[in-house]
Length: 328
Image (cartoon, rainbow, N blue to C red):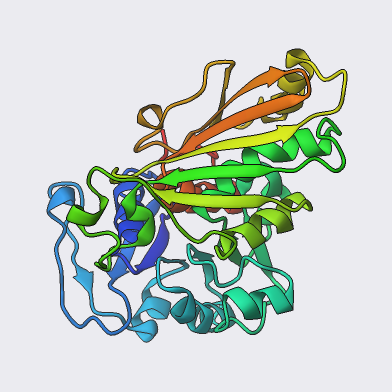
Protein backbone atom coordinates (compact mmCIF):
# COMPACT_ATOMS: atom_id res chain seq x y z
CA UNK A 1 0.00 0.00 0.00
CA UNK A 2 1.33 3.43 -0.93
CA UNK A 3 2.26 5.60 2.01
CA UNK A 4 0.19 8.69 2.74
CA UNK A 5 2.12 11.83 1.86
CA UNK A 6 2.26 14.24 4.80
CA UNK A 7 3.03 17.92 4.78
CA UNK A 8 3.87 19.74 8.01
CA UNK A 9 3.74 23.52 8.16
CA UNK A 10 5.27 25.08 11.23
CA UNK A 11 7.72 22.20 11.63
CA UNK A 12 10.28 24.38 13.38
CA UNK A 13 7.98 25.06 16.36
CA UNK A 14 7.63 22.80 19.38
CA UNK A 15 4.40 21.17 18.16
CA UNK A 16 5.76 20.77 14.63
CA UNK A 17 8.94 19.14 15.86
CA UNK A 18 6.89 16.68 17.91
CA UNK A 19 4.86 15.86 14.79
CA UNK A 20 8.07 15.10 12.92
CA UNK A 21 9.36 12.94 15.77
CA UNK A 22 6.15 10.90 15.80
CA UNK A 23 5.59 10.76 12.04
CA UNK A 24 9.01 9.27 11.26
CA UNK A 25 7.99 6.20 13.29
CA UNK A 26 4.63 5.77 11.53
CA UNK A 27 4.66 2.89 9.02
CA UNK A 28 1.87 4.25 6.83
CA UNK A 29 3.09 7.79 6.22
CA UNK A 30 5.92 9.55 4.47
CA UNK A 31 6.95 13.10 5.29
CA UNK A 32 6.72 14.66 1.85
CA UNK A 33 7.58 18.17 2.99
CA UNK A 34 8.23 19.97 6.27
CA UNK A 35 8.08 23.76 6.31
CA UNK A 36 8.74 26.54 8.74
CA UNK A 37 6.18 29.17 9.63
CA UNK A 38 5.20 31.67 6.98
CA UNK A 39 7.79 34.45 6.81
CA UNK A 40 10.78 32.28 7.68
CA UNK A 41 12.98 31.92 4.58
CA UNK A 42 15.74 29.79 6.06
CA UNK A 43 16.31 26.07 5.52
CA UNK A 44 16.80 24.28 8.85
CA UNK A 45 17.93 20.90 10.13
CA UNK A 46 16.84 19.24 13.35
CA UNK A 47 19.76 17.61 15.20
CA UNK A 48 17.34 15.64 17.40
CA UNK A 49 16.12 13.72 14.33
CA UNK A 50 19.52 12.92 12.87
CA UNK A 51 19.57 9.36 11.44
CA UNK A 52 15.78 9.23 11.85
CA UNK A 53 14.78 11.76 9.21
CA UNK A 54 17.08 12.98 6.47
CA UNK A 55 14.96 15.89 5.32
CA UNK A 56 15.21 19.60 6.01
CA UNK A 57 12.71 22.17 7.14
CA UNK A 58 12.08 24.33 4.11
CA UNK A 59 10.83 27.91 3.75
CA UNK A 60 7.04 28.09 3.68
CA UNK A 61 5.22 27.78 0.33
CA UNK A 62 1.53 26.94 0.11
CA UNK A 63 1.92 25.98 -3.56
CA UNK A 64 4.55 23.37 -2.71
CA UNK A 65 2.56 22.21 0.32
CA UNK A 66 -0.45 21.52 -1.92
CA UNK A 67 1.63 19.93 -4.67
CA UNK A 68 3.52 17.48 -2.47
CA UNK A 69 1.02 16.56 0.27
CA UNK A 70 -2.19 14.58 0.57
CA UNK A 71 -2.63 15.50 4.23
CA UNK A 72 -1.40 18.67 5.91
CA UNK A 73 -0.67 19.30 9.58
CA UNK A 74 -0.64 22.96 10.57
CA UNK A 75 1.46 23.96 13.57
CA UNK A 76 1.07 27.66 12.88
CA UNK A 77 -0.23 30.73 14.73
CA UNK A 78 -4.02 31.06 14.80
CA UNK A 79 -4.24 33.88 12.27
CA UNK A 80 -2.08 32.10 9.69
CA UNK A 81 -3.98 28.82 10.08
CA UNK A 82 -7.27 30.71 9.71
CA UNK A 83 -6.10 31.91 6.31
CA UNK A 84 -4.41 28.74 5.04
CA UNK A 85 -6.69 25.91 6.17
CA UNK A 86 -9.70 26.84 3.97
CA UNK A 87 -7.39 27.15 0.93
CA UNK A 88 -5.98 23.68 1.58
CA UNK A 89 -9.44 22.17 2.00
CA UNK A 90 -10.59 23.79 -1.25
CA UNK A 91 -7.64 22.03 -2.89
CA UNK A 92 -8.91 18.70 -1.51
CA UNK A 93 -6.25 18.32 1.15
CA UNK A 94 -7.20 16.98 4.56
CA UNK A 95 -6.07 19.37 7.26
CA UNK A 96 -5.24 18.78 10.92
CA UNK A 97 -4.86 22.15 12.60
CA UNK A 98 -3.05 22.42 15.95
CA UNK A 99 -4.03 26.06 16.43
CA UNK A 100 -7.23 27.33 18.03
CA UNK A 101 -8.48 29.02 14.87
CA UNK A 102 -11.40 26.65 14.25
CA UNK A 103 -12.17 25.14 17.66
CA UNK A 104 -15.00 27.44 18.72
CA UNK A 105 -18.30 26.86 16.94
CA UNK A 106 -20.05 29.98 18.24
CA UNK A 107 -19.39 32.88 15.87
CA UNK A 108 -19.37 35.55 18.58
CA UNK A 109 -16.98 33.61 20.80
CA UNK A 110 -14.73 32.94 17.83
CA UNK A 111 -14.75 36.65 17.02
CA UNK A 112 -13.83 37.43 20.63
CA UNK A 113 -11.02 34.92 21.10
CA UNK A 114 -9.83 34.28 17.54
CA UNK A 115 -10.67 37.48 15.63
CA UNK A 116 -8.79 36.34 12.51
CA UNK A 117 -11.10 33.31 12.15
CA UNK A 118 -14.38 34.91 11.06
CA UNK A 119 -15.84 31.83 9.38
CA UNK A 120 -15.97 28.13 10.18
CA UNK A 121 -15.82 25.74 7.19
CA UNK A 122 -18.76 23.34 7.17
CA UNK A 123 -16.45 20.33 7.18
CA UNK A 124 -14.76 21.26 10.47
CA UNK A 125 -14.60 18.62 13.23
CA UNK A 126 -13.40 19.15 16.79
CA UNK A 127 -10.39 16.91 17.24
CA UNK A 128 -10.78 15.15 20.58
CA UNK A 129 -10.65 11.51 19.42
CA UNK A 130 -12.12 9.90 22.54
CA UNK A 131 -15.39 11.75 21.97
CA UNK A 132 -15.46 12.38 18.22
CA UNK A 133 -14.31 9.18 16.52
CA UNK A 134 -17.29 8.94 14.18
CA UNK A 135 -17.04 12.55 13.03
CA UNK A 136 -13.28 12.23 12.51
CA UNK A 137 -13.79 9.36 10.09
CA UNK A 138 -15.27 11.76 7.52
CA UNK A 139 -13.54 15.02 8.47
CA UNK A 140 -11.73 17.29 6.02
CA UNK A 141 -10.66 19.92 8.55
CA UNK A 142 -9.85 18.83 12.10
CA UNK A 143 -9.48 21.50 14.77
CA UNK A 144 -7.35 19.61 17.26
CA UNK A 145 -8.40 20.20 20.86
CA UNK A 146 -6.32 22.57 22.97
CA UNK A 147 -3.90 21.30 25.59
CA UNK A 148 -5.67 22.56 28.72
CA UNK A 149 -9.15 21.62 27.38
CA UNK A 150 -8.00 18.09 26.55
CA UNK A 151 -7.20 17.22 30.16
CA UNK A 152 -10.26 19.00 31.57
CA UNK A 153 -12.77 17.56 29.10
CA UNK A 154 -11.48 14.00 29.34
CA UNK A 155 -11.72 14.12 33.13
CA UNK A 156 -15.12 15.84 33.46
CA UNK A 157 -17.25 14.86 30.47
CA UNK A 158 -18.01 11.26 31.52
CA UNK A 159 -19.20 12.44 34.93
CA UNK A 160 -21.43 15.12 33.42
CA UNK A 161 -22.91 12.77 30.82
CA UNK A 162 -23.61 10.12 33.46
CA UNK A 163 -25.41 12.66 35.67
CA UNK A 164 -23.03 12.36 38.60
CA UNK A 165 -22.16 16.05 38.86
CA UNK A 166 -24.68 18.14 40.75
CA UNK A 167 -26.69 20.35 38.37
CA UNK A 168 -25.52 23.66 39.81
CA UNK A 169 -22.14 22.50 41.06
CA UNK A 170 -19.28 24.93 40.54
CA UNK A 171 -16.32 23.54 38.57
CA UNK A 172 -12.91 24.95 39.46
CA UNK A 173 -9.96 24.00 37.26
CA UNK A 174 -6.50 24.73 38.65
CA UNK A 175 -4.17 24.04 35.71
CA UNK A 176 -0.38 24.04 35.63
CA UNK A 177 1.70 23.89 32.46
CA UNK A 178 5.35 23.81 31.46
CA UNK A 179 6.72 26.72 29.45
CA UNK A 180 6.62 24.99 26.06
CA UNK A 181 2.86 25.59 26.13
CA UNK A 182 3.62 29.25 25.41
CA UNK A 183 5.28 28.34 22.10
CA UNK A 184 8.83 28.74 20.84
CA UNK A 185 8.87 32.51 20.39
CA UNK A 186 10.86 33.93 23.32
CA UNK A 187 9.28 36.37 25.74
CA UNK A 188 10.00 37.89 29.11
CA UNK A 189 7.39 35.63 30.73
CA UNK A 190 9.09 32.44 29.52
CA UNK A 191 12.67 33.63 30.07
CA UNK A 192 14.62 31.16 32.24
CA UNK A 193 15.37 33.70 34.95
CA UNK A 194 11.67 34.63 35.17
CA UNK A 195 10.34 31.07 35.32
CA UNK A 196 13.01 29.30 37.37
CA UNK A 197 12.08 28.89 41.02
CA UNK A 198 8.61 30.39 40.55
CA UNK A 199 4.97 29.53 39.79
CA UNK A 200 2.71 32.21 38.34
CA UNK A 201 -1.02 32.33 37.65
CA UNK A 202 -2.05 34.09 34.45
CA UNK A 203 -5.06 34.65 32.22
CA UNK A 204 -7.55 34.67 35.12
CA UNK A 205 -11.03 35.10 33.58
CA UNK A 206 -9.29 35.96 30.30
CA UNK A 207 -7.91 32.69 28.92
CA UNK A 208 -9.52 31.53 25.67
CA UNK A 209 -9.30 27.86 26.63
CA UNK A 210 -12.08 28.46 29.16
CA UNK A 211 -14.50 29.07 26.28
CA UNK A 212 -13.41 25.83 24.63
CA UNK A 213 -13.89 23.82 27.82
CA UNK A 214 -17.34 25.33 28.39
CA UNK A 215 -18.32 24.61 24.79
CA UNK A 216 -17.57 20.91 25.13
CA UNK A 217 -18.92 20.43 28.66
CA UNK A 218 -21.98 22.70 28.32
CA UNK A 219 -21.21 23.90 31.84
CA UNK A 220 -19.60 27.09 33.17
CA UNK A 221 -16.14 26.67 34.68
CA UNK A 222 -13.67 28.79 36.63
CA UNK A 223 -10.37 28.14 34.90
CA UNK A 224 -7.05 29.41 36.25
CA UNK A 225 -3.84 28.40 34.42
CA UNK A 226 -0.38 28.60 35.97
CA UNK A 227 3.10 28.62 34.45
CA UNK A 228 5.51 26.27 36.23
CA UNK A 229 9.28 25.77 35.77
CA UNK A 230 9.04 22.65 33.60
CA UNK A 231 9.73 22.36 29.89
CA UNK A 232 6.59 20.30 29.21
CA UNK A 233 3.58 18.69 30.84
CA UNK A 234 0.18 19.72 32.23
CA UNK A 235 -1.41 18.83 35.56
CA UNK A 236 -4.96 19.94 36.26
CA UNK A 237 -6.60 19.68 39.67
CA UNK A 238 -10.38 19.99 39.33
CA UNK A 239 -12.71 20.69 42.25
CA UNK A 240 -16.46 20.12 42.07
CA UNK A 241 -19.42 18.46 43.79
CA UNK A 242 -21.35 15.34 42.88
CA UNK A 243 -24.89 14.28 43.67
CA UNK A 244 -25.61 12.57 47.02
CA UNK A 245 -25.21 8.83 46.73
CA UNK A 246 -22.30 9.03 44.31
CA UNK A 247 -19.61 6.53 45.25
CA UNK A 248 -16.08 5.74 44.22
CA UNK A 249 -17.49 2.84 42.24
CA UNK A 250 -20.01 4.94 40.29
CA UNK A 251 -17.26 7.39 39.40
CA UNK A 252 -15.11 4.55 38.09
CA UNK A 253 -18.05 3.17 36.14
CA UNK A 254 -18.58 6.55 34.49
CA UNK A 255 -14.90 6.83 33.57
CA UNK A 256 -14.94 3.30 32.23
CA UNK A 257 -16.32 4.86 29.05
CA UNK A 258 -12.62 5.00 28.18
CA UNK A 259 -12.10 1.22 28.41
CA UNK A 260 -11.55 1.03 24.65
CA UNK A 261 -9.57 4.27 24.48
CA UNK A 262 -5.88 3.34 24.25
CA UNK A 263 -4.61 6.67 25.57
CA UNK A 264 -6.70 7.24 28.70
CA UNK A 265 -5.42 5.59 31.87
CA UNK A 266 -7.30 5.63 35.18
CA UNK A 267 -5.15 5.84 38.30
CA UNK A 268 -8.02 5.55 40.79
CA UNK A 269 -7.41 7.21 44.15
CA UNK A 270 -3.72 7.70 43.36
CA UNK A 271 -3.30 11.14 41.78
CA UNK A 272 -1.34 11.00 38.52
CA UNK A 273 1.95 12.81 37.98
CA UNK A 274 3.41 14.70 35.04
CA UNK A 275 6.55 12.55 34.93
CA UNK A 276 4.46 9.50 34.05
CA UNK A 277 2.99 11.03 30.88
CA UNK A 278 5.87 13.13 29.51
CA UNK A 279 6.66 12.30 25.84
CA UNK A 280 3.59 10.04 25.63
CA UNK A 281 0.09 10.43 24.24
CA UNK A 282 -1.52 9.30 27.49
CA UNK A 283 -3.98 11.21 29.62
CA UNK A 284 -3.90 9.90 33.18
CA UNK A 285 -6.94 10.58 35.37
CA UNK A 286 -7.29 10.06 39.11
CA UNK A 287 -9.89 11.13 41.65
CA UNK A 288 -10.62 11.37 45.38
CA UNK A 289 -14.19 11.56 46.71
CA UNK A 290 -15.25 12.73 50.17
CA UNK A 291 -18.99 12.98 50.70
CA UNK A 292 -20.21 15.08 47.79
CA UNK A 293 -16.82 16.79 47.30
CA UNK A 294 -14.84 15.46 44.36
CA UNK A 295 -11.28 16.26 43.31
CA UNK A 296 -10.13 15.07 39.89
CA UNK A 297 -6.52 15.18 38.74
CA UNK A 298 -5.62 14.87 35.05
CA UNK A 299 -2.15 14.86 33.45
CA UNK A 300 -0.97 15.07 29.86
CA UNK A 301 2.09 16.06 27.88
CA UNK A 302 1.05 19.37 26.34
CA UNK A 303 3.13 18.76 23.20
CA UNK A 304 1.91 15.21 22.59
CA UNK A 305 -1.64 14.50 23.80
CA UNK A 306 -2.14 18.27 23.94
CA UNK A 307 -0.93 18.86 20.37
CA UNK A 308 1.05 16.62 17.99
CA UNK A 309 0.01 13.22 19.36
CA UNK A 310 -3.63 14.24 19.41
CA UNK A 311 -3.35 15.32 15.77
CA UNK A 312 -1.74 12.02 14.74
CA UNK A 313 -4.32 10.04 16.71
CA UNK A 314 -7.07 11.94 14.87
CA UNK A 315 -5.27 11.30 11.57
CA UNK A 316 -5.20 7.56 12.26
CA UNK A 317 -8.94 7.47 12.92
CA UNK A 318 -9.70 9.61 9.86
CA UNK A 319 -7.77 7.16 7.67
CA UNK A 320 -9.16 3.99 9.25
CA UNK A 321 -5.78 3.05 10.71
CA UNK A 322 -5.05 1.59 14.11
CA UNK A 323 -5.66 4.48 16.52
CA UNK A 324 -2.35 4.05 18.34
CA UNK A 325 -0.18 3.76 15.23
CA UNK A 326 3.03 5.75 15.62
CA UNK A 327 2.12 6.69 19.17
CA UNK A 328 3.15 3.68 21.28
